[in-house]
Length: 495
Image 1 (cartoon, rainbow, N blue to C red):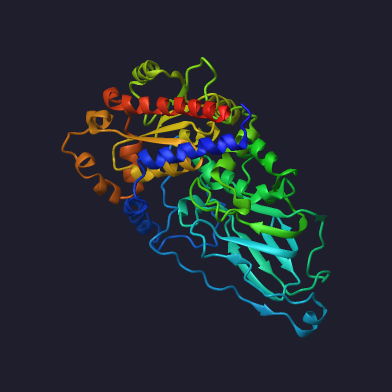
Image 2: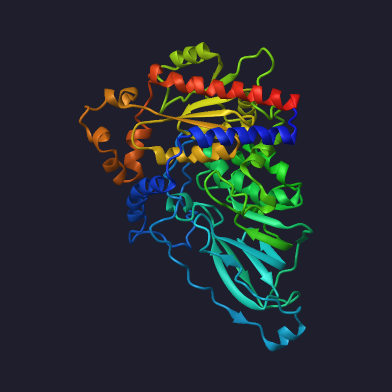
């Protein structure tokens, strides 16, 4: 369906008004407090005397792929304290060099290591030379010499995520271009460059988006394709999986830095992508005011998805996509859920998804609503048409703070968000533990032992058996919203 901007904006306003009136969003401070209970235990282990220094990139360790069905520990938020790195060593240019250099402009440090809680990043303008195999980015002929070590991946306070992310040396020299000690440019580029890592947790589908795909859109979209991507720690299988996204944002082939033994020269290089928050864009801080609605529109365009609005065709039932999980957090009574959804008026599609993005994106776009237990599969909400519905089922264990990964982002995408928190009787944990066990009576105590404790019990051992008497009102609310979309669109077209 082709979407007129005014019609899309009108439907977005309707969704946001309903979310404000009927949403289940918790106070942000409460969610952060709950998450810090987990973070404190993790931070204590991470700050032990045996913790590796920032200068080690762990290159000799074997790579451990993350489980694509499980979200890793959410330790990316503000830690108890973030050490401020020492200022780099600086050298003033000699008087002779200053006399022959370009007019002096106000100098600012190349890198920002403190303002963003998720990532360290650097910007270099001028004669910038990148040597991939050596992992160096050098600004030549600068008024000051300084050097930084940066790992360009947005989980800087999470040692587990960063252990396989290579350090990039970012520096400036007062040496003038053409000096013997500076390598000549093997390739001169007329476009700017963005340097980032695709390692960390990107084996997890959610993290692929929140750590790379979304920040890449936020950083690169404004260049209209005229930008060169430089990828450290390149994983060819991962790049291949998301190649259509890379091609949509850059007109040039990706450069595998580790395999590139040449000096490339640019006029502008950014090391590290622009990031705001998990799976989120702040339009007030974004280039050109980009929003999550712009991101989802872009992603639909990448995969050629036709539906822009969640308005079923005449005579068609609204479609509900039920995300099935193969192992943990499964719907034990999936067949009963399908029948209940059909009874309220949905056509139901059940799918777990595949390794390939395009087929599942196409399926999701044919649907008006998505239902799933908390997990990476809900990331596919980016392919739902605007005005669609997301129903997130939150397992037992005080996991509301983890549910926040999809709660606010879905609303920012112009989707109606509905949240269902299961009761103890709906959890298969009741079949494994007595009713007076601490996992039921003291979930905060379980969380206080660290992420591994929480994950093992509440995420890895738990399946869900929905009480359809409790859950049916949410299905009715979802289908009522989609039908209201249709009435709203028809009314707008009539006007």
